[in-house]
Image 1 (cartoon, rainbow, N blue to C red):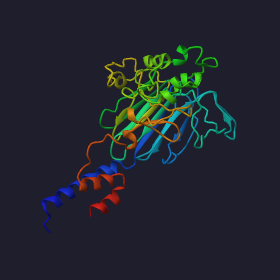
Image 2: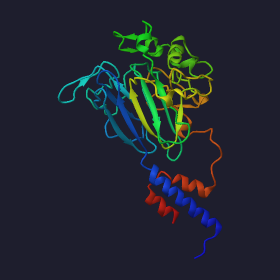
Image 3: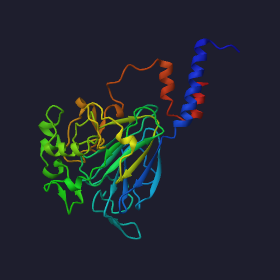
Length: 333
């Protein structure tokens, strides 16, 4: 049986995509490591349209780890709850990062600010987008690192103890956490709402600049895009709470767009309005507000600003890339 040159190219492309799909169709793993001196209770919230992971909240004693699997296309956020007190039935509450479920499992509820957040959108054959956000405040240091991916795949996060530097007007309790200016003052200029709902009118405040100086790769306010969103393709992620020291991989990364060396290993994040009046689409800055109030990079959500699409045959195959290898094989036949 003879095959035309065009057919040979198509079959070859199918073969390559089947191999890639067999490797990447299972998404990414997230490994959580607790280097804090005390137990933390990670919380997990999947964004609308994404399936829940195997758990939505769990106990993580110090110097232990746990790994979870997420499928391609999954998006959501992680954080650490501190000062928790749960009884034998799993009922209780936490001092910081509490999700309001009254249980160890957050069951679809997000973190109550102030809290340090890690946000992810996993690609379906393209880039993953990820960040660490201080827009909802801060409760403990957090670092995100990547293994096995292709592309920039930079480490990001915040290793500084902002609770020690927190101004009195933002401080929570005896230094348990540090509020954002939006949560503390509820005014439009701090919340990027009303007349301040565009990149042109919402500028960094003295408080967000304090966060940015301490953690140059973390999101510090809603339109803090250029140095705060990171990409990788096909990687697995490690989220470390209270990292004892930045890794060599972390310190070697140069912050994009700002010329900053990022030597402190401040890192990145994505603003997450948590219902404190963030309004507007953020489209001017490449961001989109989700229904739950969080800000996610527009490209991560499949919006505009893309180059022209691939040829029809390639586009069809790429659209099938997120399918299982078996299904992809039938499409190629």
